[in-house]
Every structure is written in C-alpha cells, then in structure tokens.
Image 1 (cartoon, one colour):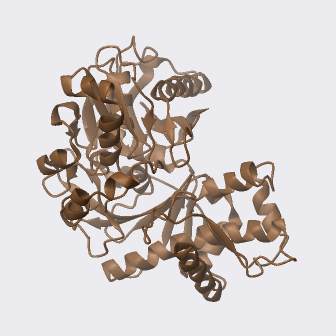
Image 2 (cartoon, helix red, strand yellow):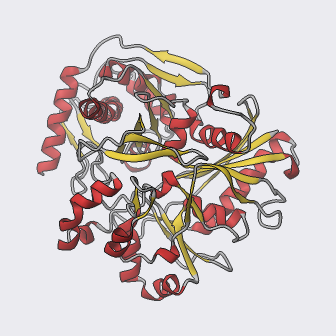
Amino acid sequence: MTILAIDAGTTGVTAQIIGTDGSLMGRGYREVEQHFPQPGWVEHSPEQIWQATLTAVKAALDQTGLKPSEISAIGITNQRETVALWDRETLASPTNAIVWQDRRTSGILDEDKFVAAAARVREVTGLPLDPYFSSSKLLWIKRNLPLIWAGVESGRVAVGTIDSYLAARISGGAAHITDASNASRTQLFNIHSLDWDEALLELFEVPASALPKVVPNRGKLAQAKAFAFLGIEAWITGMAGDQQAALFGQLAHSPGQAKCTYGTGAFLLRNTGSQIVSTDPKLIATVAWIDEAGKPTYALEGSVFVAGAAIQWLRDGLQIIEAASELEILARKVTSSDGVCIVPAFTGLGSPFWDPNVRGAMFGITRGTSRAHLAHATFEALAFQVKALVDAMTAAVGEPLQALKVDGGVTRSNLLMQLEANALGVPIELPANFDTTGLGAAFLAGLGAGIWRDVSELKQETARIFKPNGNLDEEYSRWLRAVAAARSF
C-alpha cells in the first residue's frame, strides 16, 4: 500500500509517495510563482498551484513506476491563511489567491470595530488581529472586488484555504471541505466549540454558506475522481496545515514536545495537549489536529515571517551570493558577525513581537564589514528570532524546552543549526526526512485509511543532533537592541 502526500507550499508544490514503513519511494516538485502587484501585496494564481500539483504528482508517480490505481490514500498539507476563490462548477478562480504574507489589510484592522473586538477575537480564535490571517483578506475582496464577491454571496463562488481548493480540484468539484487545523487559522473559527463562529462571520462580513465544511484531520474525507486527478481514485484521508502536519510528522504527539520548521518563514509549534494556552497575547493558540472521534489536540505557535526569505533576499536582492547553498560557505569565512545585526522584518515582525509596521534594518556596519559578515549576521538573526519564540513559550507554559525538533530546507545549514543550539542551550534534532511536512500529511492519511492502527506504529529517524557548544547571550542581547531600534524607526 502506498500513500500520496501533497505539500502545497508558498514557493512550490512537493509530492511524495510514502510506503507503509514510512520510507520515501518517489518525489516530485514544481515551483509556484509569487506575484507582487504592489508593495506589501503577495498573490498566487490558484490555477498555477493546481497545475504544479498535477506536475509534481505525475513526476512522483513516474519516478516510482506506480500506476494511479496503486495509490491507496492521499494526504494534503498546505500553506495556511492564504485564501482562494473558485467557481463551484467550473473550478476556475475569478481572482488570484491572497497569500499569508500579504499585508494589504493593515488599515482595515485599524478600524474602530476591529480594535473594539480584538480581545474577543483572540479569546475565541486564539489569534491576534493581524493581516496574516484569512478573515481580513476576505473582507478586502468584498470591499474591493464587489462583482466577484457577488458570486460568493449568490453561492456560485466558493471560498477556502488552499487545502479546500485542492480537495475541490481533486474531487472534481464534489467536495467543499477544510480540516480543523486550517480552519483555526482563518480567524473565523471558534477553537473552543470547533466550528465557524457566527459573530466573527458577521464581524468580517463573510457568509457562512460560502465556507467549507470543517472535517477532522484524518478519516475518509473526500474521494479523488479519475477524470480530474491523473486517473487516481483513492480517498483523501489526511489533511492538515503545513505547520501542524510538520508537528505530526516529527512525532511530537505528547504535550511539551516542539518543532520548528525553517522554510520561507520559521514556525515553532509546541504541543499543549488538551489545553488551550493563551496567556501571552503575542503567541498563538491553535488547533494542532482533531482525530476521527472529534478529540482535539492544541498547540502554542509562534510565527516568524522571514527565514529562508532572508537568504533569497541576499541572493536576489543584494546579490551577494548566486545560490542559497553558497551562503554558509560565505558565512564561515568569518568567526562572528563582528557586531553586525540584521533585523529581517521585510513584511513586519511576527511572534513574539507582532509589529506589522516595522521594516527590515541593519546595524553595526563599519568600513570593515564584508559580505561574509552579512551572511553570518543573517544566520544569527534566523536563530535569534526562534530563540525569542522559545523564551516566550517557556514563560507562557512555565516549563523549559528540553529539545527542539527541526525541519525545512534551511535546516540543511549546519552553521544555522549549531547557532540555534548555542542560542537555545538545548539539543537540536534533525530528521532523516527533511520533508516532514509532507510526511506528516502521509502519516495522517495512513492512519485515516487504516494503514496504521495508531501513532505508536509511526517511525521517523533522527539523522543528527546538534548539541550546544557555547552560548550567544551577548550577541542575542545586541540583536534585541537592534529589534527595538528598528521598531522605533
């Protein structure tokens, strides 16, 4: 039996075919273009996401030689908070999807009615008011694209996150569903009652009829149609937002366990079990997953908006490297950043600062500053952003972190992982399979299809452990001063 796991990320779609022993049998990837029509705006073409999905899945099938009929189950994981609209019959999208990174709704959330509702929004959803989440994106569409929104109100056009969109395309339009982890990121979902919240729908002016049905994260969720999905007719039996899927794929199933995914951004999740932890208003309480019986597991989350994107900036913006892989080589030419601090707040600061108005900055530059110092300072900034999250979570939960499981493309940097271990003072555990987001979707799908009976049968090997061999207390204090200076600019 084999599982197809689809990971529709921010920069591309990865398809993995996973065996019953958790091994990777085949893999395909297709990049997805990001569009930046105005400063602070980020969009995707839903159709391009779908075509990238088809291409990646076909490549994975071709690599293994498997027939479409040999796929036993499908798992989906995706970039969260991004919202798409599509015609329920044709499945064509009338407008681009608005991506989680997009900041166009900052002004909307400054309006009196949202400021007044902020405390209740956080209480119900676990989320602070921020353009990051889906709710204000939908209100922006209503206000600025009224002809398209008329289709939403008439019932012709559906609204959903990327998991919903993919489920619709894979099922040939038969399914309009979202999983509980993605729903909890829309800021329209009550994480206590585990359903759409009527007061929030009214606040953000979203008709309930347009939204997908919320389903558990595993079970028989929707069936693929052969005519729509490369001849595959398996059931979608697992779905989760990318960060929750990575937590599941890292086997962090017990309260207190945590993982950090270093991708375009960096996302730290700590399992809190049945408890919703909302003591720190700048951290996020979120649904990690819900099992077939409806039992929820919650997590505490911190979101760093810029991680791998900072490396892309050095490559494409400053052009101090030609390929991302060159950055560590460059950074190792020096032993420190020589006092240089970088605050990579290109789209504002996420947790634990939550300041959408701050922009990126560099401090401590001298005549002797070189490209190597900038490279080293960038790695330090990525490590320090995560340390700020870990410290905030420790304060909120009251228990220190014992170890941190990591994944994502940026973790291929041994320098970053050692800097992180030194900054946190705990071991950093690197998995054998870097694509733990897709692996988590596969694990959920396998459980949902009955391929595995329970989580005790799941396996994920640790490839390397980075142990602390020093501390970066002085450098971290300096970086926090740089953050404060950037915020006051």
